[in-house]
Image 1 (tube, rainbow, N blue to C red):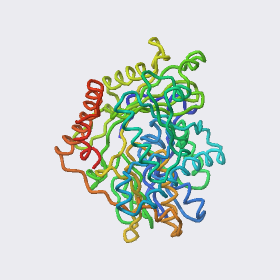
Image 2: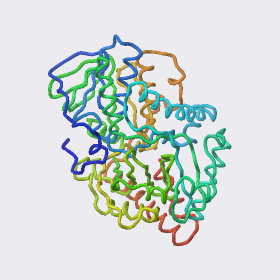
Image 3: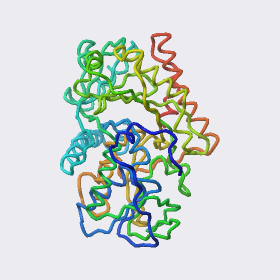
Image 4: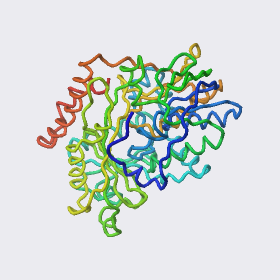
Length: 459
């Protein structure tokens, strides 16, 4: 796949060299073969091993554990679930949709529990998320979101409104008129989490093979350059890289998200900025942005806006988009006046995340073929992948748990359109969201563009 051109903050502050493990030596046979050593694959191996220590499990990774989105993301372990409420209800019921969201809230706590139990120093701090409203249209949208959430059965303990003063107690930002706050999110160091998981599952007896590209997934078999691995169950845990597998180019679209990070900030800067409780933060704009205060007192800040590449291509050079990096730095300076104009930015990096055509995450097991899968997280994979791993473990072992009946289990997303329609549609949606933010800034009213494009960008 080739190495990334830019070094992420997370890799640079990992505290250990990333030395690849041994590759697959040759043809082999296992009970479960997991393709991909990111969060989904490693959580699956972790919970499978705990459920049945007799299982022979292999994890096959083309690069090294955490090479993809699991090692590069924004570090939000949140209860956010990408599938729309209406789609979940259509597949089940309002009660089941609420149960899934409640399970996601518990998943945040589960990740923290495992980190503590297994000694994974991932910087887990459950400080919640603050979503700032910085314009009239943003206030309208976020107030409506709050009303909808409470109408669906959530309470103020899940999501509540902060007035401008209360919001400033969390984060001092420019032009804030109010905010939403949820406690269901933890800040993490994503690379330490994924590398720690790899060590834990390997110590438990799982074979983790790196530098082992998988060329094809077959019923109960995986084809690699070193030979074929047969297994009763084959788990596809490749997320944004799924499009590289034969027959899966239109299954998931790899869309890039980019990040920047500041130098460590002194206590005086944090006195001006806030984030004493380590809340993650965003605002109500259409183009998604996300930030956190890191364990070493930097701000790591990311956002969408990089283009989708024709044919679902993934290349190391796509990790770096200078114009997007500049936009992120300018956006953060504008958002946080306490940051100071002279703050240095030390890191800039990026990578692809996976989006299914209907923007719906899914997990499942086809018992006829032995092929299992999870993904389509739309950037909300830190927490969702843990739920996926627990669910796959129950599906594989045949455990009749509450997880295997959640409404995302067994969902099949339709395929993306063929090229160039896919390229045109995705990039038109990205551009429309930028135009929508500009329109709202200019008019002070909710965007007509965003309303018109909503069916396209949400499947």
